[in-house]
Image (cartoon, rainbow, N blue to C red):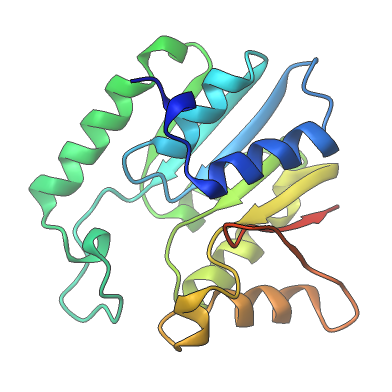
Length: 191
């Protein structure tokens, strides 16, 4: 079954934000940080034939000291590599429009030119420090008029104190900047 038929709410909202805020009739470059098994990138590559995606994830087992209790954080190295394999296989249809980067997101950000991306979607580490690191690392990579977006803002994880997405995003942009949120807990800010 193709991705268009089983979108998650956040993917539909992200696609709508791209349609409303970017000229997708022209070539555009997006980036997803925290790819997991490729659901979001696959859907976007299917929806937007002018889109090239940079897909960044560690695909590496977390240390035992991680506070995150998600199935992704608890997966062993064999499972992480399986998700990488699945992601690569699922995006073969767009092999000329996708770049898969395996590694730490902050280190990967240094390989990208400034003002290169039309949008970025953060869905990597959800603890406050990881989100903060990613926001700072990628801020200059977005073109003026581009979209800074992410997942799990002010959702149950934030409200229960398990995530630090909202705290990190609000601190990064400051109290005078309004962060918008859609259904599916997608936050966004047009630069």
